[in-house]
Length: 386
Image 1: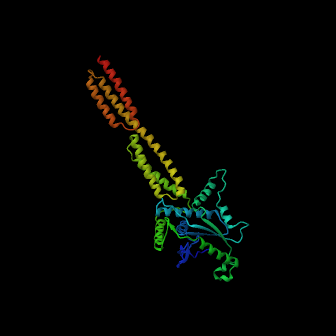
Image 2: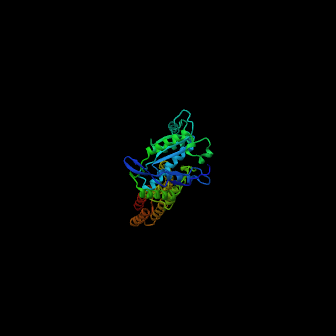
Image 3: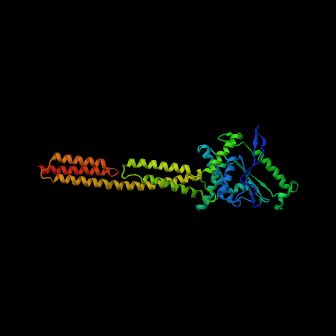
């Protein structure tokens, strides 16, 4: 039916007891609400899928007829979303261990291909000799599924009956015999690949699993997250722009000019704060690497502007101080009875003020000019005295 009956995630109330490698294990079956339910958003679908991906040790991806690009994109996004929020709960340095993936394709004809061949073909890189950006994005989606590794298998299931609208009223004896046989094989396959849920390298008991579920739910509900309906790059771009603005605002508070070392220190501190803010807000490890590089490049561009502004303000200040000293020394030189002591005292006072007030990258150049001016005026003073 188009109107979904499963709401959210349903859990089969009584666990199925299985012996897995000699250990008695309780297996719970989860049923998730179908995608694109009436009145539900992409964010809702993505959270449901991500939560199932984090919780499960086996994820059955149930698809009708064939594998579409949208199905691959949605799976990729759910895995990355699960990895992201697992990292937020357990720490970014803790490896996310994805569920074993079972592609369940419900169709009657495979056109000579096995269902595993169809899955493998759908996940192959698309040739992109012309460097098409859209194809690049398609291949990046496939790359983000690399975390699944070879941890997947595929199974095909025929339709239960031609009269699909009557399925709810049919008993097992009325269903297609091939379907019933394949359904039993599917049950056996699922039972054979089930493994206990591993979190941080160890299995969980019931109370630990519930605590883990509560942590993941809190992480999913806490922060703003993108959806498959909005590109991850666009979501991260907004965060990047806010972090770049944070850096710019911190740098704008500086009273220029400053010494080059002071400017460099403030730049590094401000950049560190911006990067920390991005690290706390960004989505996805794979996508974030590109965004971090872009943020770093944008910050360096802004920093270059501050370096140029600092050079300008330094030159402007030092030039004013130099001119003031030059005027003062000219006044002393033209005195009717020039005094060497008065000249020296005047220069020392002028030079002291210059050393205290002239800052920034232009200081060294103007210090040299001050020394040359002093030597010139001192020579002129001696000549006058003689």
